[in-house]
Length: 83
Image (cartoon, rainbow, N blue to C red; front, top):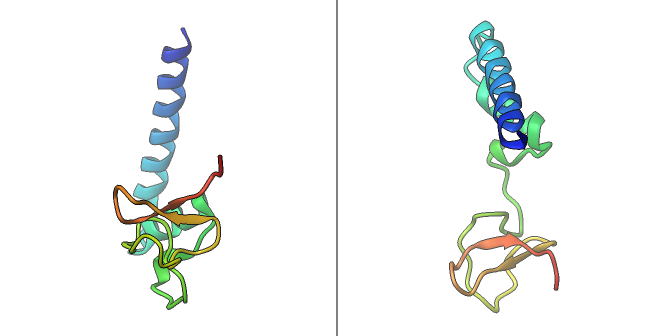
């Protein structure tokens, strides 16, 4: 029951996004939509002094942004949730 409700809700959200995308004539629509959904501006290509989520890093060098940590296993910055 919960799974079917989740799938129905996900389908409605997908239908809304596709409908909104079909009405939009701007080329940067996907970037704007993702920026609004996640409330971040990582898509503009701005230079910053730290590495964000998914950027490659070297463990132990503290290159990742605050609230992120370099994964020893995957060698990229992940969100640090603490222990």
